[in-house]
Image (cartoon, rainbow, N blue to C red; front, side, top):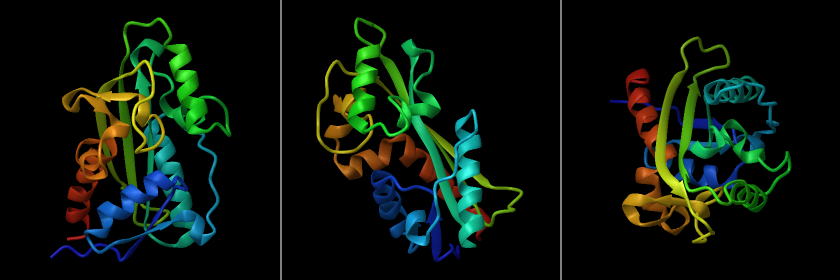
Length: 201
């Protein structure tokens, strides 16, 4: 029988991400604790790749709390922008940019572009402790395209402008259960849980 940790700190203060992790891990009897409730501050994301930033965040949260930690680094990769915003997705329009600021800048940069292909990418890292030499790492990608205008009010981030071809709607028009099954984070979490079952067997 797999014995997961009772508590895992999530190295994020993003309310949308917190809700998704709480829902998915709650089914396993694991309590997800946002790092902010334990006094963990954000750590500078000095990596140049998604995996580097995820490791930096997970290690910091585990070191401060003494708990196993999970961090994700995710973003949207737009073909016509040579992969931007990428790791800078959350601060595309500036350090304190809102979701709306980032969306407005993305639509502005893509004005007149016919190639609107894009994908969400998520890298997850789970560290059992701050000095874990073999962190559990998984990833997921969710392909679609960028719409001309915003549609839908669910989700967060770039969801209102990310068109999901198989459902003929934006990510912000999907219900939570649908999104969790097919999203980049849902894919990465499924893969992470499979690996965690082996690690904690």
